[in-house]
Image (tube, rainbow over all chains, first blue to last red):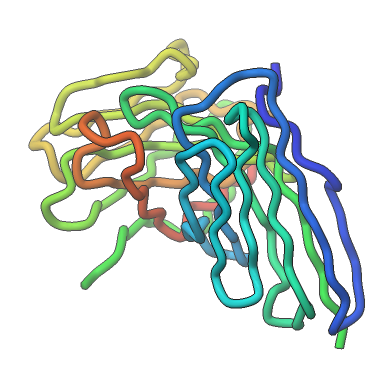
Length: 110
Length: 117
């Protein structure tokens, strides 16, 4: 059972375009994390959102946690080729356990 | 600061053979995780250690997978015998004290890519 559904699964855009990735669940999580994974590497944490309705910005990336703490979105403004990678959302449960979504493969073409 | 180290980086074996992966977490991190990431999917937790004790191994296929962290530092994950469906990236991660903080950061190693033929 996939507890976290990410969409879209694949996204190919031109440099300079904006995009949004969604992470949805029927379960409530205590916090939600977003990771980026590049080929041949492990995931690297981008942000953790904890409070329902919370919005965090990291340069051109904006992360939002849904009011009910069941869903989240990642918006990238003016995407660059360096943003290419696999974006993973992960819901946190007690004891440090993370439940990952299946990922969104982003390709930004120059 | 040194990150999480894993070896080997790549391994190709035939089905029914055995294989072992090694992980050295960040110094001082009490919690260590092993994940399996099948192509096109997100990582799936196999086992979580707190120091040298197992916290969660509910998703570990115990008939063929085993893991240990005898001295509470390094860890090994073994598959015996391997099946075709075990082809995946095996990621090791560590955190300072996973049980204590829900917002704690997990630091991932580069992974071991396993291909079972």
